[in-house]
Image (cartoon, rainbow, N blue to C red; front, side, top):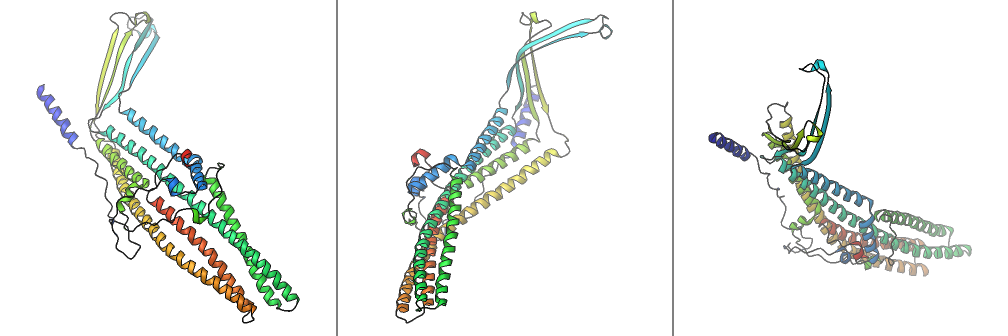
Length: 471
């Protein structure tokens, strides 16, 4: 008997040694730092902490919009509900690994006809039971249940990281929409000023045509420019209305009690970032952490699928009292118990167990590819945001020079026309170019700030305070 026990223990140890530990998370092959956008060589930096929301976005009205979005956005509520769902699924799976004990009582009263009894007499019998039952409990020799628990935990953590990633995306979307609204406000103000100037020019030109100083062709040229400005203003107002509507949706239609918005130059999003930002910063991104947890879940599911090839040992037990009569249920000698261990070993199931393992391994391969693709996408997004910040700042500087040149050109064209040295068409062309340069400058200013927001998002965002702290 001792030899049999020794052999059984040896068999159990050997089978347990057949289980495979999940492989480690793969490391994506990335450069040590992002490409430098200046003439100097890229130099690694220490891992800088990203600022909190109220520091990153100092505009009080933008802070109020962000707080409202984090508190009232419907899609964010959906993400939170999915996290709660994943937590409940993890609790359910964890509970399956613990013994289930229940208190039970049952009673049966039956009548058997005479022709069905051995004695040939009609009998009336009863059976009553009360006690504690141990539900079917699997002894996890091969780690199947433990692996399923690890998979459920990883799925929960992945869902929570996905929620964090959505929060970061929501913050960036609200900030970019807010900046777009401010850009459109400033472009509308410029268009309104230009429209007032051109209406005055049209009034003067019409008067000059009436007295015969200018031709009707010149009047039509001024009128064309006036109508084009009105059309541009209407288009800008349409875009501003759409941006406001989107911002209202993102903030959950929550009313904002905040001061008026600051202009673009007061948003504080033009801080310089030194080159050579280390690629290790990607580890803070929640979408990468979510992909890593999904990979961990896939690896745990492979482990569980492999364990399904081994014997399954389940224990069932009960203990209590039993009696043929209800009055004798708790008398001396009525105690009863049962203990039912069972062992099930898969022999042939039509290939279902093997197919489940193949499915788990295929999903693991997909999770590895998803993780690596997520890391590479994150690296590209950060590199793109850094490049956008650098080159948009250069482009804005050139646009400032262009605007100064166009403004001087418009002034000189007006002087030449007043002196009779050129036609009014030169004045109109110069004014048209100046207006376009003014509009383009505001667009570039906002685009540079949006690039900073995208960099904030690409690096995983910073600390997110409570709504009350931001208000």
